[in-house]
Image 1 (tube, helix red, strand yellow):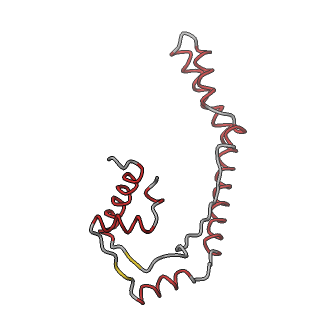
Image 2 (image 1 turned 90 degrees about the vertical axis):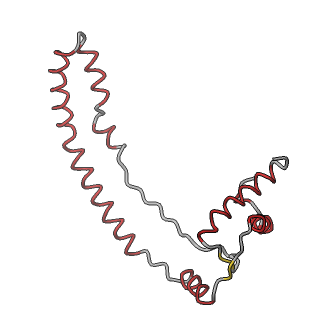
Image 3 (image 1 turned 30 degrees about the vertical axis):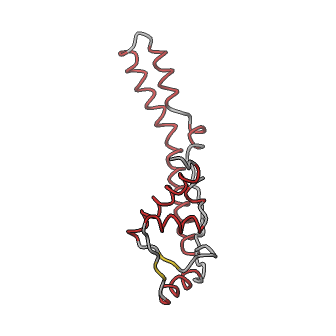
Length: 155
C-alpha cells in the first residue's frame, strides 16, 4: 500500500498518532480557493507565445541543418589529416569518428519541439481542513508509517 492510497480515516488516525491538528480554512481563504477554481481558462497568450517559440526553434533548426553538412564535411576532413598522424590504422579511426558525426537526415530526427498542457484543479471532495507547511512533513511521515504498518503489521 502506498502512502497516497490511505483513506481519510487512515490519514486522520495517522495525524492523531503524530499529534498533528488540522485547521479550518477561513471564509476568505475558501473564497480564494473558489475564485481560483472558477477563473476563466485564458491560455491564448501562453499558446501564442509557445507558437512563437516553436517557430523560432524551427528556424534555428533549419539554419543549423543547412550548415551541418558542410560543417560535418569540414570536421571529417580535418580528422582525416589528424588520423593519419595519430593512428597506425587511420581508416579504422575514421570509421569510428564518422559514426560520431551522423548525417543531416539522421540528425534532423533528434531535434523536436513538443508542448504538453495540463490543467491542475482542486479535487472536488476537498475537505475544509488545512495543514500548515510545518506539519506537512509530519503528515507525509505519518502516511508512510501508517502505510508501512498496514502492509507490515509486525514492524
